[in-house]
Image (cartoon, rainbow, N blue to C red; front, top):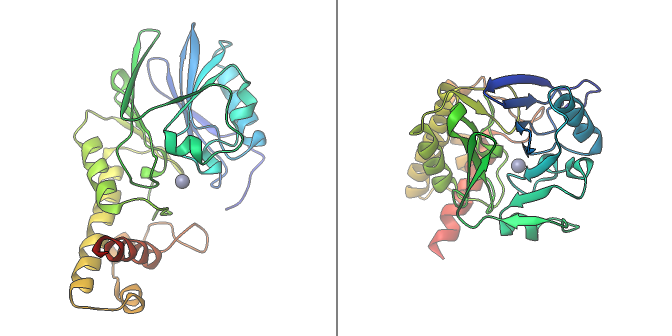
Length: 263
Ligand SMILES: [Zn+2]
């Protein structure tokens, strides 16, 4: 997780829409939609240093005020740059995310299910897919640009960090995205992706889940499940120690979810 003094790379994805792919793997990617009336930013990076890098790139494209910040979830690497955009921006998150953030933002709009914004000529669809990476994720879909900003519901070619979410619902949330018209996928971390990459990540979680369920059904203890999980077709995925977790860690998290469900 090397930190970096370099700014991230900006990619134009469609009319008025840009991805900011962070040069620091520890800091989340961002997506921003510009209009004369204001700019909407999805996730702001790890801290003020990263937030300022993002803001500098946005300012190369537009001088309009940032009026909306979507925080896809409460993890600090997705919201640490919020303060750079001032007190006037409205932070959009789930109530769960708001409850897990200190201090509370002066203007915080919470989304229970779905929120559609009309910004300039474009539509922005923000929705909570249910428990997935955390209990309070948001996904942002830009239908005009056929782009989705997934937060940490998807990391390109990487096994994910898992919080107190729900892996089966997470898989369902990915299937929902795969059914949408999508050209560009802005992942929570790492390189800009396509539906093919998202599908591969979906297949990783599905296959992991299947193996863990089968092992669990035979009464295999968790320690043995960790050792027995075998996913050579995903061996190119980023894992610990360079990154957050391993396949065994993901298996253990899901195993824990299965055990908790029996209570
Ligand atoms: Zn996260």
